[in-house]
Amino acid sequence: MTMTLDPFFRDLNRLATEVLGTARAPQTMAMDAYRSGDHYVVEFDLPGIDPGSLEVSAENNTLTVRAQRPDRPHGDSEVSYLTAERPRGTFSRQLSLGNGLDLDNISADYTDGVLTVTLPVAEQAKPRRIEVGRGGGRKVIESASE
Image 1: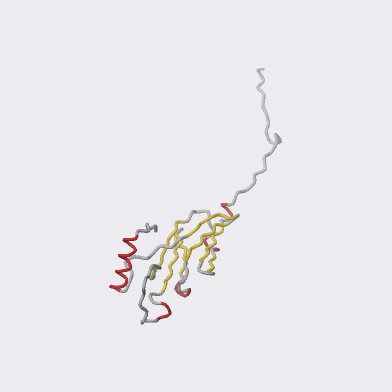
Image 2: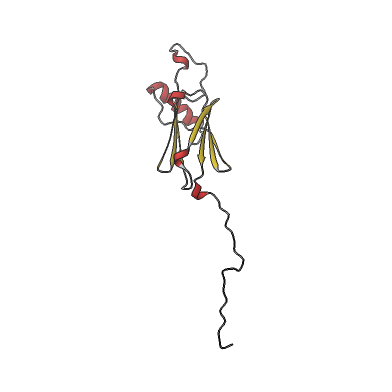
């Protein structure tokens, strides 16, 4: 899921959250993805989320990450915002995964507001060196008419 950051949409979504009590659509989260050796790493920026709400799953070659940032800080109902620019509510992101990954050994860690998901490359997808023979197995048959 990819969403464009549009200030009008952000404000409309915030208004829907305040009036209806829930966000119209899950917010997306910023991420970096890179390969490091025999694994891929995806880092999601999720500062201030409730760690208990964090869900990471892999199914049918799709990685799904979901999290919640509470609507009110520390459950205080007497809060009156002067400005509220940080999105709140549900965050969600789905990534399509290739066939060459070991989905049984995915790991995830949430530290300092960053969720790091590590996706190892499957053994069968790792590059292998192939030895090249040097003329030992090739025979040349000459015809008798020459």
